[in-house]
Image (cartoon, rainbow, N blue to C red; front, side, top):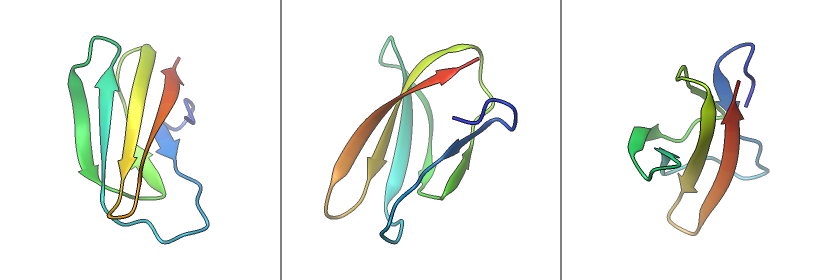
Length: 66
């Protein structure tokens, strides 16, 4: 999470395909869309769970918005 630019940067060696979902700690879907190396995210301060989904795999990451 790059709080100064309000983006979530996704670093990978593979091509980004599929979709992402961002959830609050109360399991509320906050944002979703197509995967990108830089996902715009301008939400309130808190902890979020980011799911990066592709045809092959799904990964969850914890992100902190200041």
